[in-house]
Structures are given as structure tokens and as C-alpha cells.
Image (cartoon, rainbow, N blue to C red; front, side):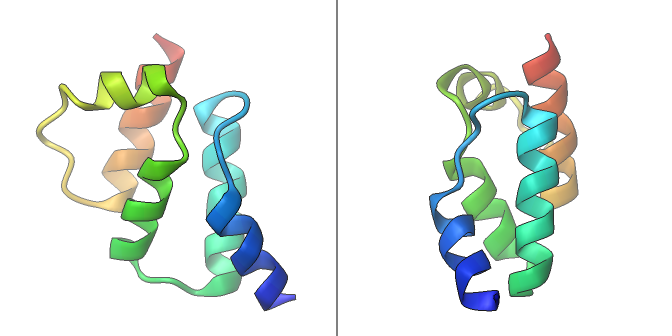
Length: 77
């Protein structure tokens, strides 16, 4: 199960809302047990282009949880 979650996590991309993406990402990341730095990097990779662009203007993001919150906000705007 952990190997399957690892593969799914590596290929996961935002297909709907950032909120749904975050929920699925966090679920898989908890199964795989990766640290916050790895979560931060992998989570950023899967965003839709509009969210990536919106996040490029945010300078106060320093950890995974801040990234999740900001991505959801950008996506909802």
C-alpha cells in the first residue's frame, strides 16, 4: 500500500480545486511519511498553471502549511 501511495503521490496533479488537490496530497503524503520539505517541493509541482502563477507573487511562504493555504486562496480567487 505504501509503494502504491508513493507512486500516486509522485504523479498527482491538480485536476480540480486546489482544496481537493491538497486533501488528496496530504492523505498520500501521510501514508508515505515524507517530511515537510519534500511535501513543499512535491506539492508545488502539481499545481495548475494559474495557481503556479499566482503563487509566484507570494514571498511570505516559508513552509508546507503556508503553501497549502496560499494555493487554496489563489485558486479560489
